[in-house]
Length: 162
Length: 328
Image (cartoon, rainbow over all chains, first blue to last red; front, side, top):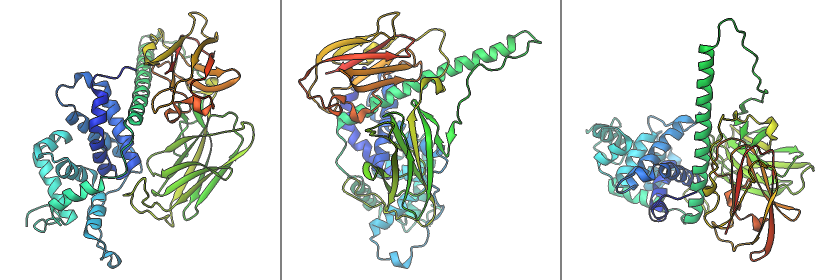
């Protein structure tokens, strides 16, 4: 099987970072590796048609694959609309642990927006491009997500500035 | 905590285990590309057949009674939530455990050495597979929405064995330091399925296309020896002499392509070191049944690098051309 020019080099240099993105989406290293390999296999077929830096293209495939995976599977995660109250027994859990858990309970699109914005450091416009939605939608998803994580005291749970 | 801390958190949490060796990842990607090509070919064949069928229904003379389908009947597509037919394998047994139980077992007699297990759990606990009480696979985390599958090493086909699925608390470990803690719950279920290789005559193979696709010989080797069928003698054994290559992560693979369903046994003397099986008319690469993790079948066969051997390719049930690459 002939490998497209530049593909091996891309995998060697860029895939470690993309794996981390995949992990933040799936929260499971084995799943993340599977997701990354699936995305790269899809990119393989279109490699010659990609002009310029292929990373945004691969990232978009990765995010879309992640979304479609969890849409298709019958028993996928059921994100809660609101986080449960923190039980007293867990009150002393580290704040970072709380936020990490809360991140895992976000709806997948909100989690994806946060990962793209705060891990990949994409702009709102770039994030919107990856997700195939409007900038306004990215803003509202991010606001709601941050409100649920209780990271911004100025945001209520609905994601509206207080 | 603010959004700057969130950046730090995401960075810290994703700095997980050491990254997979890139050659292993590339091998995995190639495997997925090959599988994807097979699926696309099969889907295209299905569309063509469906189109021809629809065309026939529209154009056939009125008053002609439809003939009963001449296709054999097969088992259901799904058995207890598991796909019944996958890559030439078929479900032969399933069982379910109920949490807080910790294990379930299936005892059966494998008819060949090609046996795979699959698991599914309603909670993402850790799980392991045991054959006759001995560890056979460390399944990692068990998933509610993804079948985890793997090959079982069957030393003596024809002898009964007991395959056991054991679930344990899902806890972080060196390979997955950030794995969320998931204790074995009090309610829910976990499943074990066993698949065995199916004879071609009992597998729902897509119909033969009117014209076979050209053989993709270039797919089988990037470096090494190619062996091809003799035109018109698809089931005639072929042989070649070579020196067993040194082992690295991606070398030594034995790959094959076929135009049609059929089997290719790779033999050294009387020893079968691999078998390539195709259950479709798609012409992408066929990896060894043992999977990419054992892409170096020489080691499995205990044949040392540097050994001079004569390799025989023994085809069966082939109705088209084939080629095998013995990669260096």
